[in-house]
Amino acid sequence: MGNSQSSIAPNLQHAQATGLLQLSGKKLEEWPAAIHRLNNNLRTLDLSNNRLTSVSTSIDGMVQLKQLTLSSNRLTGLPDQVCSLSRLTILSLERNFLQSLPVGFSQLKSLKTLQLSGNKFKDFPASVLDLPALELLDLSTNSITQLPGNMSNLKAVELNLNQNQLKLLSDSLADCPRLRILRLQENCLPIDQFTPKLLRDSQISLLAVEGNLFLMKQFDQLEGSQAYQERVTAVRRKAEH
Image (cartoon, rainbow, N blue to C red; front, side):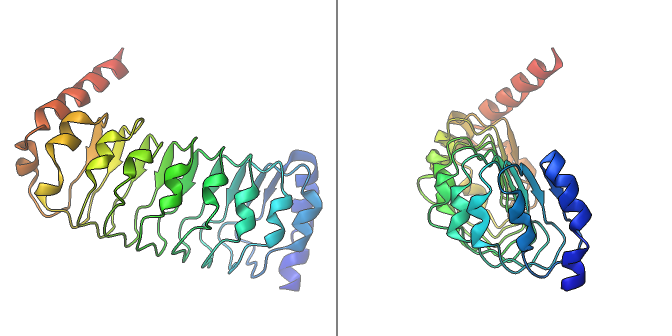
Protein backbone atom coordinates (compact mmCIF):
# COMPACT_ATOMS: atom_id res chain seq x y z
CA MET A 1 0.00 0.00 0.00
CA GLY A 2 2.84 2.40 0.84
CA ASN A 3 4.45 1.92 -2.57
CA SER A 4 1.16 2.53 -4.31
CA GLN A 5 0.58 5.71 -2.33
CA SER A 6 4.07 7.06 -3.03
CA SER A 7 3.72 6.30 -6.74
CA ILE A 8 0.94 8.87 -7.08
CA ALA A 9 3.13 11.88 -6.20
CA PRO A 10 3.66 12.92 -9.86
CA ASN A 11 -0.09 12.65 -10.48
CA LEU A 12 -0.78 14.92 -7.51
CA GLN A 13 1.67 17.49 -8.80
CA HIS A 14 0.03 17.46 -12.23
CA ALA A 15 -3.42 17.78 -10.66
CA GLN A 16 -2.32 20.81 -8.68
CA ALA A 17 -1.91 22.64 -11.96
CA THR A 18 -4.76 21.14 -13.98
CA GLY A 19 -7.55 20.25 -11.52
CA LEU A 20 -7.61 16.72 -13.00
CA LEU A 21 -6.32 13.78 -10.94
CA GLN A 22 -5.90 10.50 -12.82
CA LEU A 23 -5.24 7.52 -10.52
CA SER A 24 -6.77 4.70 -12.53
CA GLY A 25 -5.13 1.28 -12.23
CA LYS A 26 -2.74 2.18 -9.40
CA LYS A 27 -3.57 -0.94 -7.32
CA LEU A 28 -4.79 1.29 -4.49
CA GLU A 29 -6.44 -0.58 -1.62
CA GLU A 30 -7.14 2.50 0.50
CA TRP A 31 -8.37 5.99 -0.31
CA PRO A 32 -5.23 8.18 -0.64
CA ALA A 33 -5.36 10.84 2.07
CA ALA A 34 -2.98 13.02 0.04
CA ILE A 35 -5.80 13.73 -2.43
CA HIS A 36 -7.36 16.13 0.04
CA ARG A 37 -4.51 18.60 -0.34
CA LEU A 38 -6.21 19.40 -3.65
CA ASN A 39 -9.70 19.94 -2.23
CA ASN A 40 -10.03 23.53 -3.33
CA ASN A 41 -9.23 23.09 -7.03
CA LEU A 42 -9.90 19.43 -7.93
CA ARG A 43 -12.57 19.22 -10.64
CA THR A 44 -12.05 15.69 -12.01
CA LEU A 45 -11.03 12.62 -10.00
CA ASP A 46 -10.51 9.17 -11.54
CA LEU A 47 -9.89 6.29 -9.15
CA SER A 48 -11.20 3.54 -11.41
CA ASN A 49 -9.65 0.08 -11.68
CA ASN A 50 -8.27 -0.06 -8.17
CA ARG A 51 -9.09 -2.18 -5.11
CA LEU A 52 -10.91 0.39 -3.01
CA THR A 53 -13.52 -0.93 -0.57
CA SER A 54 -14.67 2.45 0.73
CA VAL A 55 -14.78 6.16 -0.05
CA SER A 56 -13.34 8.68 2.40
CA THR A 57 -15.84 10.62 4.49
CA SER A 58 -13.64 13.65 3.82
CA ILE A 59 -14.82 13.70 0.21
CA ASP A 60 -17.25 16.50 1.07
CA GLY A 61 -14.24 18.84 1.15
CA MET A 62 -13.90 18.55 -2.65
CA VAL A 63 -16.17 21.50 -3.21
CA GLN A 64 -15.21 22.04 -6.89
CA LEU A 65 -15.54 18.40 -7.98
CA LYS A 66 -17.56 17.92 -11.18
CA GLN A 67 -16.60 14.42 -12.32
CA LEU A 68 -15.93 11.42 -10.09
CA THR A 69 -15.01 8.02 -11.53
CA LEU A 70 -14.90 5.04 -9.13
CA SER A 71 -15.73 2.23 -11.53
CA SER A 72 -14.15 -1.24 -11.21
CA ASN A 73 -13.39 -1.17 -7.50
CA ARG A 74 -14.76 -3.18 -4.57
CA LEU A 75 -17.13 -0.62 -3.10
CA THR A 76 -20.08 -1.93 -1.08
CA GLY A 77 -21.45 1.48 -0.14
CA LEU A 78 -21.00 5.25 -0.30
CA PRO A 79 -20.68 7.65 2.64
CA ASP A 80 -23.38 10.27 3.19
CA GLN A 81 -20.75 12.94 2.52
CA VAL A 82 -20.92 12.18 -1.21
CA CYS A 83 -24.31 13.90 -1.18
CA SER A 84 -22.60 17.24 -0.40
CA LEU A 85 -20.86 17.42 -3.80
CA SER A 86 -23.18 20.11 -5.11
CA ARG A 87 -21.24 20.71 -8.36
CA LEU A 88 -20.94 17.04 -9.34
CA THR A 89 -22.29 16.41 -12.86
CA ILE A 90 -20.88 12.93 -13.67
CA LEU A 91 -20.66 10.01 -11.23
CA SER A 92 -19.35 6.68 -12.53
CA LEU A 93 -19.71 3.68 -10.22
CA GLU A 94 -19.87 0.76 -12.64
CA ARG A 95 -18.66 -2.72 -11.65
CA ASN A 96 -18.70 -2.44 -7.87
CA PHE A 97 -20.79 -4.20 -5.20
CA LEU A 98 -23.32 -1.48 -4.43
CA GLN A 99 -26.84 -2.45 -3.31
CA SER A 100 -28.14 0.98 -2.33
CA LEU A 101 -27.39 4.71 -2.38
CA PRO A 102 -27.12 7.14 0.57
CA VAL A 103 -30.39 8.52 1.92
CA GLY A 104 -29.57 12.08 0.88
CA PHE A 105 -28.50 11.19 -2.65
CA SER A 106 -31.17 13.43 -4.19
CA GLN A 107 -29.19 16.45 -2.89
CA LEU A 108 -26.89 16.09 -5.92
CA LYS A 109 -28.76 18.83 -7.78
CA SER A 110 -26.20 19.18 -10.60
CA LEU A 111 -25.84 15.46 -11.40
CA LYS A 112 -26.47 14.73 -15.09
CA THR A 113 -24.89 11.30 -15.64
CA LEU A 114 -25.13 8.41 -13.17
CA GLN A 115 -23.45 5.13 -14.10
CA LEU A 116 -24.42 2.20 -11.85
CA SER A 117 -24.15 -0.77 -14.20
CA GLY A 118 -22.67 -4.03 -13.00
CA ASN A 119 -23.50 -3.65 -9.30
CA LYS A 120 -25.72 -5.64 -6.91
CA PHE A 121 -28.95 -3.61 -6.90
CA LYS A 122 -32.06 -5.71 -6.28
CA ASP A 123 -34.33 -2.72 -5.72
CA PHE A 124 -34.54 0.34 -7.93
CA PRO A 125 -32.79 3.18 -6.01
CA ALA A 126 -35.75 5.51 -5.49
CA SER A 127 -33.61 8.51 -4.53
CA VAL A 128 -32.55 8.96 -8.17
CA LEU A 129 -36.13 9.95 -9.00
CA ASP A 130 -35.57 13.29 -7.26
CA LEU A 131 -32.40 14.28 -9.14
CA PRO A 132 -33.55 17.40 -11.04
CA ALA A 133 -30.74 17.62 -13.63
CA LEU A 134 -30.39 13.91 -14.43
CA GLU A 135 -30.04 13.06 -18.13
CA LEU A 136 -28.57 9.54 -18.24
CA LEU A 137 -29.23 6.79 -15.70
CA ASP A 138 -27.51 3.44 -16.35
CA LEU A 139 -28.61 0.58 -14.07
CA SER A 140 -27.87 -2.22 -16.53
CA THR A 141 -26.50 -5.57 -15.35
CA ASN A 142 -28.02 -5.56 -11.88
CA SER A 143 -30.75 -7.74 -10.34
CA ILE A 144 -33.71 -5.34 -10.24
CA THR A 145 -37.08 -7.15 -10.48
CA GLN A 146 -39.58 -4.28 -10.59
CA LEU A 147 -39.91 -0.51 -10.71
CA PRO A 148 -41.53 1.85 -8.16
CA GLY A 149 -44.97 3.27 -8.88
CA ASN A 150 -43.75 6.86 -8.99
CA MET A 151 -41.39 6.49 -11.95
CA SER A 152 -43.04 9.58 -13.45
CA ASN A 153 -40.77 11.64 -11.16
CA LEU A 154 -37.71 10.52 -13.13
CA LYS A 155 -36.13 13.45 -15.02
CA ALA A 156 -33.71 11.40 -17.15
CA VAL A 157 -33.69 11.47 -20.94
CA GLU A 158 -32.21 7.95 -21.11
CA LEU A 159 -32.80 5.01 -18.75
CA ASN A 160 -30.82 1.80 -19.24
CA LEU A 161 -32.17 -1.28 -17.45
CA ASN A 162 -30.72 -3.92 -19.78
CA GLN A 163 -29.77 -7.26 -18.22
CA ASN A 164 -31.74 -7.08 -15.00
CA GLN A 165 -34.48 -9.43 -13.77
CA LEU A 166 -37.45 -7.17 -14.42
CA LYS A 167 -40.79 -8.93 -14.44
CA LEU A 168 -42.97 -5.86 -13.98
CA LEU A 169 -42.96 -2.35 -15.43
CA SER A 170 -44.72 0.72 -14.10
CA ASP A 171 -47.26 2.50 -16.28
CA SER A 172 -45.99 5.73 -14.73
CA LEU A 173 -42.98 5.45 -17.07
CA ALA A 174 -45.31 6.90 -19.71
CA ASP A 175 -45.52 10.12 -17.68
CA CYS A 176 -41.76 10.75 -17.39
CA PRO A 177 -41.49 14.30 -18.77
CA ARG A 178 -38.15 13.93 -20.57
CA LEU A 179 -37.69 10.17 -21.11
CA ARG A 180 -36.87 9.47 -24.76
CA ILE A 181 -34.70 6.33 -24.58
CA LEU A 182 -35.68 3.26 -22.55
CA ARG A 183 -33.48 0.15 -22.69
CA LEU A 184 -35.03 -3.06 -21.34
CA GLN A 185 -33.16 -5.79 -23.22
CA GLU A 186 -32.55 -9.20 -21.63
CA ASN A 187 -35.00 -9.05 -18.75
CA CYS A 188 -37.91 -11.32 -17.79
CA LEU A 189 -40.73 -9.15 -19.08
CA PRO A 190 -43.92 -10.68 -20.52
CA ILE A 191 -45.61 -8.94 -23.42
CA ASP A 192 -48.49 -7.63 -21.29
CA GLN A 193 -46.15 -5.25 -19.45
CA PHE A 194 -46.00 -3.07 -22.56
CA THR A 195 -49.32 -1.32 -22.17
CA PRO A 196 -51.06 0.99 -24.65
CA LYS A 197 -50.34 3.88 -22.27
CA LEU A 198 -46.59 3.23 -22.37
CA LEU A 199 -46.50 2.83 -26.14
CA ARG A 200 -49.03 5.48 -27.14
CA ASP A 201 -48.87 8.21 -24.52
CA SER A 202 -45.18 8.41 -23.60
CA GLN A 203 -42.45 10.51 -25.21
CA ILE A 204 -40.24 7.44 -25.71
CA SER A 205 -38.80 7.21 -29.22
CA LEU A 206 -36.27 4.42 -28.66
CA LEU A 207 -37.56 1.37 -26.81
CA ALA A 208 -35.10 -1.55 -26.80
CA VAL A 209 -36.90 -4.73 -25.68
CA GLU A 210 -35.18 -7.70 -27.35
CA GLY A 211 -34.40 -10.72 -25.18
CA ASN A 212 -37.56 -10.78 -23.05
CA LEU A 213 -40.38 -13.36 -22.78
CA PHE A 214 -41.98 -12.68 -26.16
CA LEU A 215 -41.24 -12.49 -29.87
CA MET A 216 -40.66 -9.14 -31.51
CA LYS A 217 -43.53 -9.79 -33.94
CA GLN A 218 -45.83 -9.90 -30.89
CA PHE A 219 -44.49 -6.52 -29.79
CA ASP A 220 -45.17 -5.04 -33.21
CA GLN A 221 -48.82 -6.11 -32.94
CA LEU A 222 -49.49 -4.46 -29.58
CA GLU A 223 -52.09 -1.75 -29.18
CA GLY A 224 -50.20 1.54 -29.27
CA SER A 225 -47.31 0.11 -31.28
CA GLN A 226 -48.23 2.17 -34.33
CA ALA A 227 -48.11 5.42 -32.33
CA TYR A 228 -44.68 4.41 -30.99
CA GLN A 229 -43.41 3.66 -34.51
CA GLU A 230 -44.64 7.05 -35.69
CA ARG A 231 -42.57 8.75 -32.97
CA VAL A 232 -39.52 6.70 -33.99
CA THR A 233 -39.96 7.75 -37.61
CA ALA A 234 -40.47 11.41 -36.70
CA VAL A 235 -37.30 11.51 -34.62
CA ARG A 236 -35.32 9.79 -37.37
CA ARG A 237 -36.51 12.27 -39.96
CA LYS A 238 -35.70 15.19 -37.70
CA ALA A 239 -32.17 13.84 -37.19
CA GLU A 240 -31.65 13.60 -40.95
CA HIS A 241 -32.42 17.28 -41.51
